[in-house]
Image (cartoon, rainbow, N blue to C red; front, top):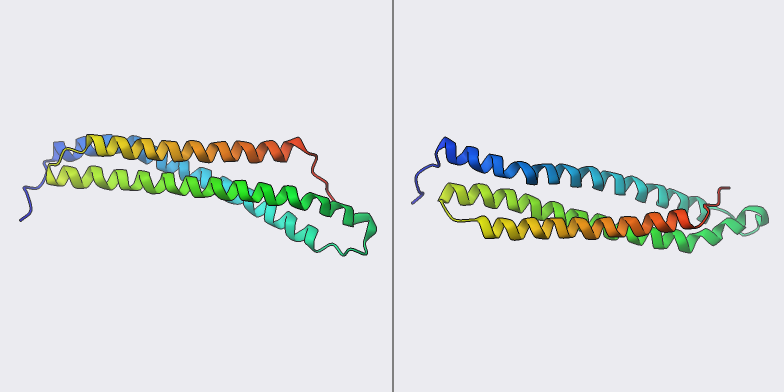
Length: 144
């Protein structure tokens, strides 16, 4: 049997508490879009460099950039993974907040843990992104 339906004030309270995680979710979505755009640029550059024939002595030297691009792609891939984990945690957090309000369950600790997990995953993602940017800027990009 379902408990009484939450009052408007209870739901309003949960909605106001879900505002911060909703902003975090929006930030994570924008960050994931940025990471995917960078990943696409790295992949396009890798495809271009792999398309250079070894007989093309002038441009074949550009292939020396491939190991760096592979490292960058791996870091961006990890950053995307952790951003998605943060997004999933944030989404679960919002669901838990509403479900617990509906059933009248105390949810503060669970929501706090999920928020910590989401922010920690976002932080790991930012660290991988910073490492990728450092590699991208530390060595000159060879354009052919």
